Image (cartoon, rainbow, N blue to C red; front, top):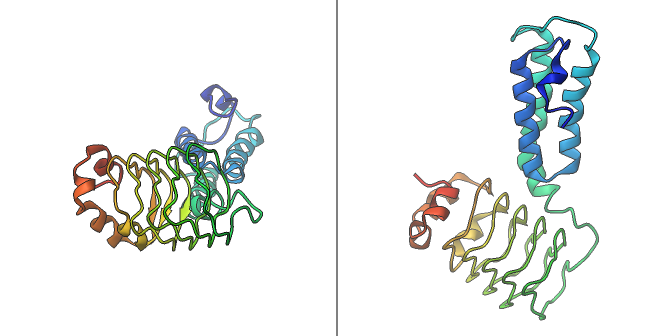
Length: 224
């Protein structure tokens, strides 16, 4: 809050244009839920504000310090896609459920940040549960039910999603490879800020009937 108040810019030598860039960077970092990235962007902006508190003149956009601030902030924001996949999705650490053969239902539970890499979880009820920031790298999730679950920020690269039900699921900021196209039901799912391994996946998703049938799903991808 101290940082994001324009009143703290009084006497600072960097421009309001750079301030705007900094705040946009912080907002994107917060959405990524990566504490390290948020700290990096915040520290860059705050250090440059405080380093010039004794001066009374604003630098104009295009100046050396203005350019340096922009470069630092934009380089931090540029790693957001990598962090949402590699940092948020691996945040659980440890073995957790990695490589395990699972048979118990996960319905309604809270498993934020857990590692399901290489796990076998076929045909399981995983609905209405929290899997925020979980890692499902190369996990076999075929025919499982994730309806109305929160998988925001999850890494599902290389996972087997054949026959998976994602109806009404929160998939915001999650990372998907080609296998998302094998899911049985995407109606009502939200893909805001989701990442895909290639652009063709988006066009294929937008051609699906279940995606076209729900305006929220369609707009969250977004589809033309």
